[in-house]
Length: 176
Image (tube, rainbow, N blue to C red):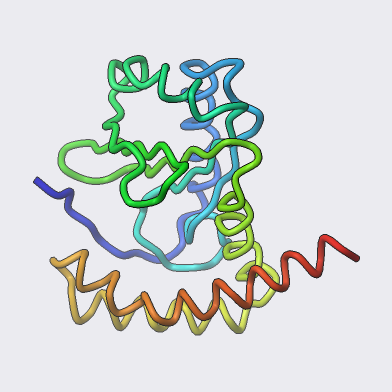
């Protein structure tokens, strides 16, 4: 059964929720982790979003994470495998039917790490783009308040374009 979803104004407690969840992951995954990043809309101050904490743990090896899947499941996370993105170990945690966090784990050398970091960083650095994204998300939620697939589809083309812009900005910034 899919989890319920909602869309709310930015919650200043989201960074604290990220830190609490990151501590849980550090305790479960230990030395397998290099770092953990808060990504997704909840990592962009002021941006309305689904109240779901998106996390990007970076691992020394994806095999170390695959070996830890049972520990993650015992701690209340659902394992989805790569879930359509090769090189990723994807986990979620729901509470009472509501998604609380999405965890996208990649190995330290995976190029998708930059993609996940670039987009929210770009939104934080470009408030006018974040405002445009928020307006699109509000429209998507208004059209599809009980259909997460419809909500995601409305945003898909815009995100794909902006993600490429964000990646170019990210790489250029790194070269400076």
